[in-house]
Length: 608
Image (tube, rainbow, N blue to C red):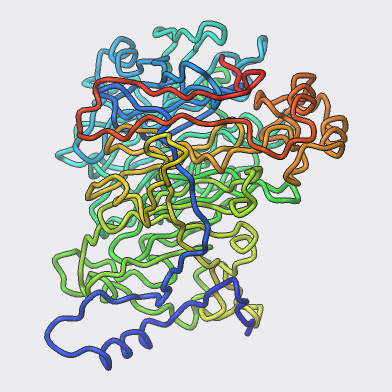
């Protein structure tokens, strides 16, 4: 058997852990146990936060962030898409650019739908050829959202054979729109549904749609749209939909979203089930066996390989990060983390924390599941259900001026349990042993599985924009917000900077130490001659987060040379960011926020 390295942890058998609990505990109740014995420590990393933008009243439910041509957009579940200010823009006001709630009503005659937990717009994704006139993807954007069920479904296409529950009045929808790239005006009549998904339960619905931002024209992945969908079921998911390949529930989908002849979209030849001879298998499926994969990101390693990392919300025991491979089965409903999920209803005393799991069997390699690259448990009372844990993952920071943030994936527990923020190293996640092989004696047993170690971060909030006042320090986001729930999500900006949003107050926080040192193209902490060489050698190239793309517009050009030249010899950051004070109450109606950048010579973000 292989030995676990210092940067990974081994799977702890449930039987050993329960024995330790029983020996150490007396009395009728077993309190606040630690299933994984992970004891996540602070690493010394601190995220430096400033309130950057606040949504106007009525648009608090921030759900996702995306970028286009150097501009960053925030999406709210109420159906609005806001343009965020550039990191050095003097006005600093978030600007309403699209009202999709209104557009959907006008295009379909039906409104978006939802309940207190799941509702409305989930994401917007711009085709990589959005700004390239003369291409089929010119002006095309895609939205995922929850919508009322049509009265007449004669011309409606439903993906898969999932069944709508008796009390469910809505569907998950993937739709295409045409937006003028010059004016950013949406053409309501351009609305085109690619598909709908029926939901057994109004929970864990359709989620994020994204394109691989690192794919370039000619690459196999260029122009292919990814989308995730939860299991849309009650907690123990008794119908096993995520394990069935005839529906979209608990799946990651990959398609070419552009219409082709009579086809609403096409299936990439390289999809893992594209050649299946079983007519009930959906060729749209890229990976399966998820419970609620509501956040995911594309992350490039030092060798240029792109890795998809998914945050999958668990049931009563485990929150997990999964590294997606084509055709991979991530285990739900049969597995939760690195354990067997007993799949009992919450009404059963053996369905809760620790009791709802059992150890992986000795022949686990025969089942060919893929296990998490990182995980944390619920730290609850034995047999407790619904302990208030839910994971949200961000992305791997690659070009931060703060070297302690580089190569780190950040994730968070965003529900009522604690609001802790964690990080894990990308290299350690890539190296984790997450698949067993019965023919390989080094990884044929459950004890051979490894995961990257998680560490907790501190949060430093610049609450008053006074350099003489120390930042307010917090151990978790729930305390920072003075709320029983943080409802936070991560977002990636045009420069690779990190944003954290919260539905509790409608605020977008900028992580200031995630910003690059503009002009420092080799990331050595100063602008010097070596940075010119990086710029010269990459001049004319286009792509995502290029080392010498100083203005974040996706192209290394003359403007990026100017950014380096004007800062040559300096190792100091460009900006003094002016924050907006935290809202004192839940009434957020008044103002947007502004950011003032001092001593900046050109705008570093390009608006559409």
